[in-house]
Image 1 (tube, protein in one colour):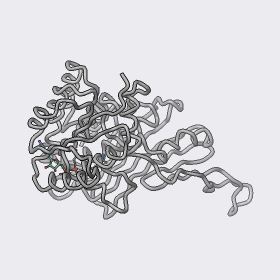
Image 2 (cartoon, protein in one colour; image 1 turned 180 degrees about the horizontal axis):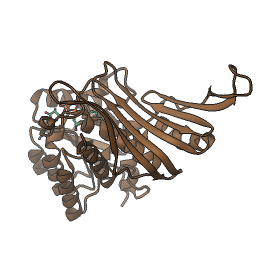
Image 3 (cartoon, protein in one colour; image 1 turned 45 degrees about the vertical axis):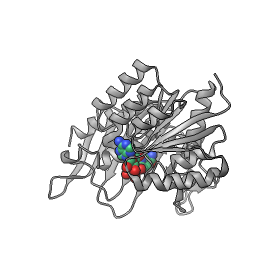
Image 4 (cartoon, protein in one colour; image 1 turned 90 degrees about the vertical axis):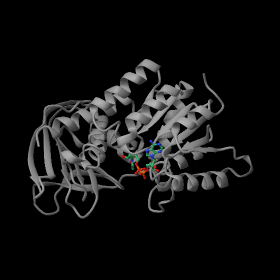
Amino acid sequence: MEKKHYYAAIVGTGRIGFSLGFDKKREQPASHTMALLNNKRIKLIAAADSNEENLEKWRKYVRKHNGKNDFTLVFPTSQELYENVTCLDIITVAVNEDNHLEECIKAIEYKPRLVILEKPVALNSEEAEKIRAKAEECGVPVMVNHERRFAKDYLSVVSLIDKIGDIQSVTGELDSGLRIYGEEFEKDGTYSLLHDGTHLVDILQFLLKASLSNPLVSGVHKDEKGIVRNFSAHYQSVVSQFGTIPEVTFKMSGRSKFFEFRIEILGTLGKICVGNGFAELYLREESKLYTGFYSLTRQKIKLPKKTGYFSGMIQNAVDFLDGNSELVSPLEDAISDLKVLEEIKAKF
Ligand SMILES: NC(=O)c1ccc[n+]([C@@H]2O[C@H](COP(=O)([O-])OP(=O)(O)OC[C@H]3O[C@@H](n4cnc5c(N)ncnc54)[C@H](O)[C@@H]3O)[C@@H](O)[C@H]2O)c1
């Protein structure tokens, strides 16, 4: 049933929960708090965080934002939040990875109308399946914040694809300075295969409407401590919404002194490159360099000024609760992303 307002609370008022909303370089809103406060159909009424300092900063900001109409409540644990606030429609879980299982299950047991869970679903697919089982038992839908699914620049790929002919290959690349994988980091998820790799696998599977499985993993480079710093995973004959793609490659570096997140789609007539902060289309044109040849030339494309990645995610939550839309980033898709990462990890 459509309501005038949906009441929301947030568990975890750290970076993605709150403080990234102050990053001047990021497109805003860039945190759950700011995105929830910006949506007129949502009333953000409470938060819980075990970190007193984070919670106090959150309380001050939200109180100032709401002015005289402020009734927000804060709690040191989600349990106290749930015992004291009984009208929640939406619970956002934005705690660290190692607490996703426990906090997401508690949120589901509250039986709100929707749980918004930060990525990755959990530390591994075994934990993620426990979340799925609890969500099914309690009949609570869960959406996962794989925010590129809502970003207009990434979505532009779908409308450009017919310009580049038949797809020959797709490459997703993620470069950062964070280690890719070491068994000792499984306990808290502080490795980039899980932390960032989940975004890359998710957007590839989402845009292509494909299931990646059975990878050939090559180029594995381990440092002197045995920690994986580079790899490539290749998938052959991938069935996608754009036909069968001969090769999809997923490459990561964990020893780069820069951060890069990009997808390149090579067609028979051109190429699309999309990544954080850019979307480019190249098409074949008569070459300026060689008589009788064709080269790829960058085309002018119009993109919206704002991608709407975070506000779009929250709007999807409202549209879903109104009964007007499916969840764009449902739990089961995010669990399948984890399984793709685990298949790769098994081959290191
Ligand atoms: N979607 C994205 O692009 C994106 C970006 C950054 C982080 N994340 C994800 O968001 C999650 C949080 O990351 P972060 O960078 O905001 O971390 P953070 O450490 O800045 O914030 C986490 C907050 O949760 C609180 N917390 C942890 N366990 C708790 C518990 N059981 N009860 C109450 N509070 C608890 C901590 O005190 C902290 O304030 C991680 O899963 C991370 O992968 C996603």
